[in-house]
Amino acid sequence: MAVVVNSGTAVSTAANTKSADQVTGTYQFLGKGKITLVAKGSATGMNITCLVGGIALVNDQAIPYTGTAGTISVNDNIMTSQMMGGGRVELYLRNTTGGALTTDYLLLFEPA
Image 1 (cartoon, rainbow, N blue to C red):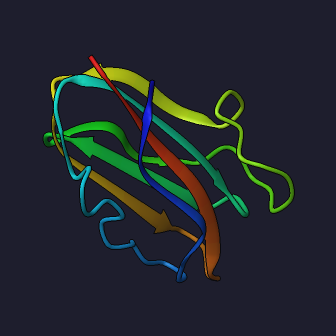
Image 2 (tube, rainbow, N blue to C red):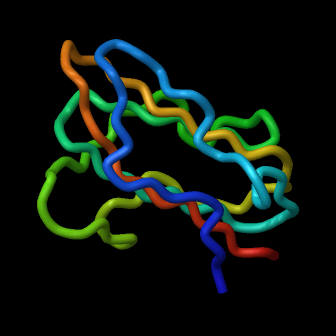
Image 3 (cartoon, rainbow, N blue to C red):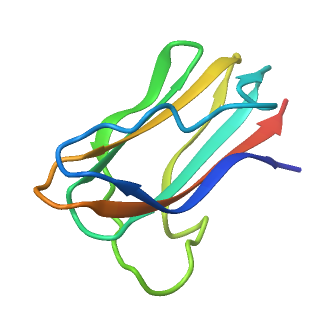
């Protein structure tokens, strides 16, 4: 059974900026297991980076799923899902546009 490492709804990122690390607290350091990242931006122009133990699972990739209506679906909005050896988890959002955009995201961990 997966646990939610971190999640955010309508996380606003100012124009042409990169967010602070979104993962803090209890699940900032993980052991071996499967990491799944699901994300949806309010418009094109949002990029996402996810690092585990210094290894990039998603490295400044565009979030291809956009929309402000409806729910975030694990099956439809997945960015990555893979096994990792563990380490510190980091998640960053970057806005490449001239206006503020929002992102919904869900970071799940399933222990091995």
